[in-house]
Image (tube, rainbow, N blue to C red; front, side):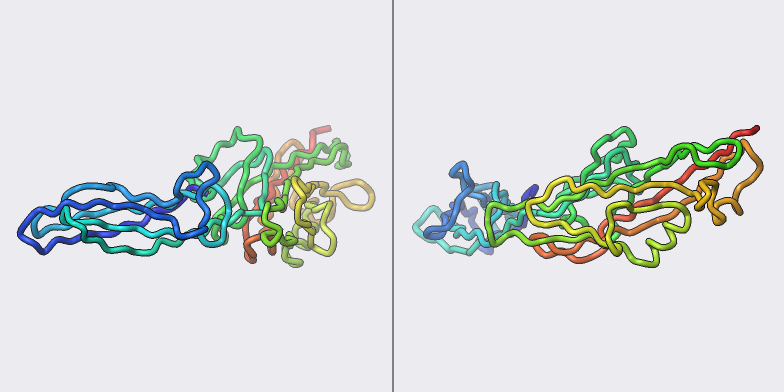
Length: 281
C-alpha cells in the first residue's frame, strides 16, 4: 500500500525550553522491511519544545511487504538528561488479492481511489485497474460502449464485445490466500440480457476466482437480436426511423467476495451502453 500516518503531540508545561529526541526500536524478533529499514519512523526526530507550548510529531508507517502485525517501540528522551518514556507502535499490512481490470473503459465520477492514491480518470486508458479490497462500496463506476452492426433489414451483422479481467493473486504467505468469486444480482442480470447484454463466462450469475489465478476474462457481448437474427422485440419497440441512433443503457453491479483479506460487498458499477443505428435503405 501507500502507508499511513498518525500524529501525536508533545506538551511542555514548564517555563523552560525542553530539548527532545525520538528513537524507534524494533520489538525482539519482529520483522523489518525487506531492505532492513524500520517500517515506522517519526518526524521530527529531534527538536525543542518551547516553554509552555506544544510540538506536533508525525508517525509514519511504510511497510514494504504484507505482515499481520508489525511492532516497534518509540522512545522519547527529553530534557537533555537520562529521562525517557516509551510507547508501543503497531501496524498491519495486507496483500490485496482480488482485483478487476477494465480495459478500454471510461471511468465515471472520478477521481477513483486505488490503494489510497487518487487516480485522474482518463478515457484514453487501455488498462484501467482497480484493487478490489481497497475500494469502498459503490465508489467505482465504469462505462463500456457497444456498437453492433445491423443491415437495412434490421438483421445483426456483427456483435460488439468488451472483456473485463479479474484475478485472485496468490500471496507468499500460504495463510493469506483464499478463493474468490464474482457475482451479479440475478434480477440485474436478467434485465441486462433482455436488452441484449450477455455475460458470456458466468455460470448461474457467478464466476469463480480460484487463488493464484490472474486475468480471468469476463466477456460482455451486446447482441440485441431475436431467434431470427433480427432486432429483439424489446429493442425494436424503441427503434425510431432508420438512420437515427438509439442508446440502450443498463447499469450492472459487480460484487466480489472472498480473497484475502476477506472481502464481501458491491465493488464496481458497470454502465453498459449499447448504440444502435439502422442504416437507411
